Image (cartoon, rainbow, N blue to C red):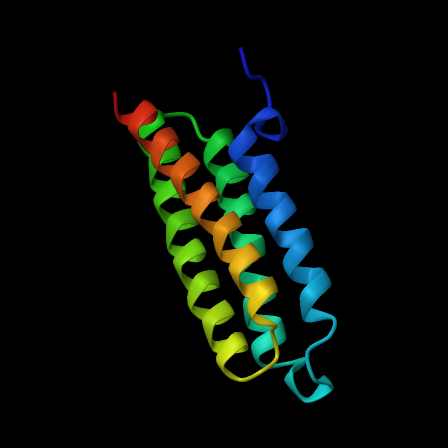
Length: 118
């Protein structure tokens, strides 16, 4: 049995995605520190944070609600990554790699929601 959110593969992958995005956004222009850099970092951190918060809730329904919120944050992260690529702040190879990681987290979140709703 999984006793803590940190043992969930989806949380681990969402956390790893956040670390990767923090690494690539260090190279963004300084003028974007309080703009795109901050926004993309907040959205990606929100994914694992919502998984953790949902795990701490008392019902499956509440947990699923936070997983839906995490999915929304994931969609926001994908949108911001595209913007960063289109603005030339993110190389295509980095963009593709991060999008693949987003897709993997999304699939795991969908599976978790299906499990919680069963």
